[in-house]
Every structure is written in structure tokens, then in C-alpha cells.
Length: 312
Image 1: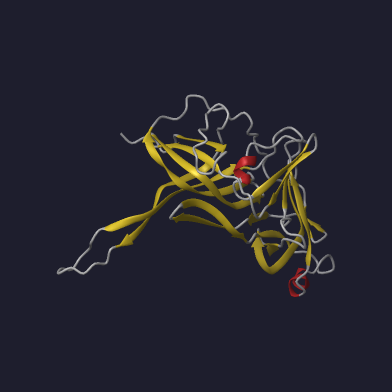
Image 2: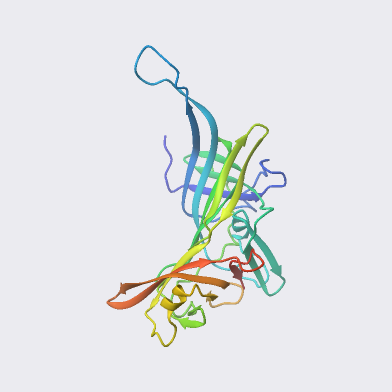
């Protein structure tokens, strides 16, 4: 009989050898996902296109296979200063470095090489789906007033097989901290090019180019590029405070940051020194004029410092 769509569990463990099952277990490798969706078999088929004496189909031949997993993660710190948050590895698989400063913070910045890989066990519909050599994209950070802050991830992986199996009897999710709602009490103003401003919502994505390659002698998942962009909606500022239209016209690059969370160790911060505002348009928010800014996170003069995500 089909299982309930609500019964889901996921485990993630860093691989020592690319594409070799790291064998995650429930009491130390469980991950807390929201709105998870798996593509159990992403099949690449090739038509034979042979000449026949009749109209109609011939069978296609499988020439490649992979698996996809897309989900959201709650955006909160670890609960302890200088301790990596539970989502740290999930972010590293999307081409982030993890830099730990003991008793202070854990910082994540985009990287361009040596991206780690992971094994994901995803339990759904009474089956275990094994995703090997997983790498992916941070599809979003969403911080919107009246909502919970979330990150989105999408992994591409080698096909590791699907087998009948129940979820693990024990899942230790104690490292995953509860997020705080986005509001005045819990969230700072945003600083955009030096202007401190309230904001309605902030969205960004890393926009990695993720490629599954299945070549003679090699099969892997690689990240070949990124193009981080985003948007923020703010109350329309006076032009004397800051002129974002001129910032767009002059291709101005400046700083950006905000902080979410009220307790040290469980705060998260997004910041950049190289943010370009590439567009500005009006919106109606509760009959007030708002300004939506299109954002581009540039990599700066040395690279790999497009932006930083910090747990502090």
C-alpha cells in the first residue's frame, strides 16, 4: 500500500571518497527539511531513430541517470557561539567554505574549487533513496516580515538506488535550533549602501550552475559557475537619504547587511561589501509606496567574497 506523503526523513554525511556511500545514520546525521521534494530518477533517454516500415515509436535507450532533492532549511544559528550550525554541511555542498572562529562565529563564503560532496539518504513512500556524490545550489535565502526565515537548497546526485526500507527508528535533530519570526523584535534594519532601512522582504540565491556529467571513465556532479542575485523591498526612501536610481545609473557598489535573531549563538547575519543595485521599481505595500531593489552580489577584487553568511 502507498505510504503517507507526510512520512519523510533525511540523513546527510560528508563523503571521504567522491560518490562512495558515506553511510549516514539517524542518531548523528539527520537533517531537518521543509517542503522537501525528490526526483527519484532523472532519466536521460536517447531515441534510436532507426528506419522502419511502419509509423510509430521505437523504444528509447537510457544513456544517463541522476537524482534530485530540493528542500528548505530553517535559517537559525547553532545556539552556541563558534559552533557550526546544523545546516553547515548542507551549505558546504553548495560551494561554501566554513570558517570557524571559536567562541565567536562560524562564517560561510562562496568558493570556486574543492567543493565537498555528500551522501544523502532520503526516506519517502516506504523507500530509501540513496543520493551519492551530491552537490548543489543554494536556491534562496528568504527573510520576509511575518514569516519564518528559510534557506533553500537543491542537490543533484548520482543514482545510488531505491530500496524498500522504513525510516530510521531514531533521528537526533537536537542540533537544529528553532527559528525566530521576522519582525521588529527579532530582525535588524537592513543596511544598503550605508542607508539603514526597514524592509518588507529580502530574497537571494547563489544561482550555481550544477552539471551532472556521465563520461567514459568518470561520473560526477560539478559546479561550474555562480551568479548570486537577490532583491529587497524597502519603504520608499527620500532621495536626500539615498538615491538608488543614481546608484543604478552609476553602477555603484557598496555594503549590505542585516542581522536576524535575539540571542547570541542563535543569530544569523548576511553581509557583503560588494553589492550592486541593478534595478529600482515601485511597489504597493499596504497602500504605501515601497521600492524594490534588484541586487547583484559581485565577487570583489580578490574573488570568493561575494557575500558572507554568519552564525554568531
